[in-house]
Image (cartoon, rainbow, N blue to C red; front, side, top):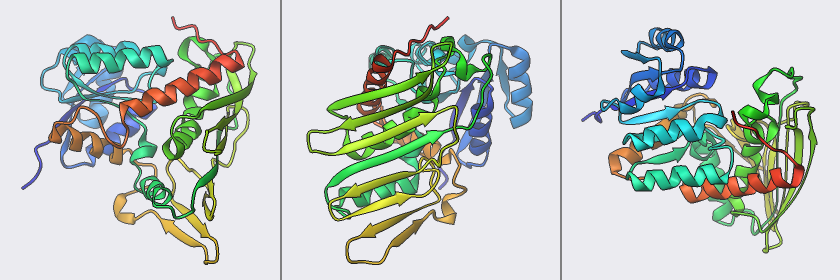
Length: 331
């Protein structure tokens, strides 16, 4: 018997909202019921593009739509608190893009609202839902490489981005850290939990956002993580996890990998590849499926992307910003 369709609302109409909608359209048990934007024209164009029945020119109408099971919030992260909070207060379940919010305070407020209104809430950290990343995590937890000693991860875009671009705008939470740095930081958290120590340096733009940030994270176990993000240099987006008896290398695109290689002492390297049945590597369907699974099970958060973990990552990002002098100025 087919599962009953989960009815989605999409809040915002930018590039990531379009990519998410395209994947939802391909899921037989998902239905996009409505879309909202602050521009009625933008919402209507988006609705026509994806065959969506309702287009709202304001966020409030979407939040009040009782025919929606869950809202995907795809605004710039500077608006996540307002948009997701509006939906939670109206009784909607929410999947909110990363970075979850501008800072830990806002993230904590959203988590409190979800609990107050007994709603499901999840950060759209698609990396955590990726089958190959889940396999990598399981291998590490099963001791395939022994005790974790170091983690390395980087994510940089070549740029340059002009001063008017959102990535250069402090009012929109611009800079490398929230857009890109959230991935290497989240990767380290996935494998080691919240660090006990953080030491960071950054190069700032004239506007005060970080053009690139590098950090050393440390744990009482003796493990270290080196993470880097940039909007002025295209990096390899690689990751590596080294343990006491081997290592795992993700050669490219660690946040949505196509393959990784397990090196174990005394054995030939072993490659793990994405199963073609799981779809293309850059799909959002895994996180969408996880949200729908959780909703059908009556869960208020996902075990793959737990809220405590989201708050933990936000706490680390706050520390990185405080050490590097990055200050956002939301409008």
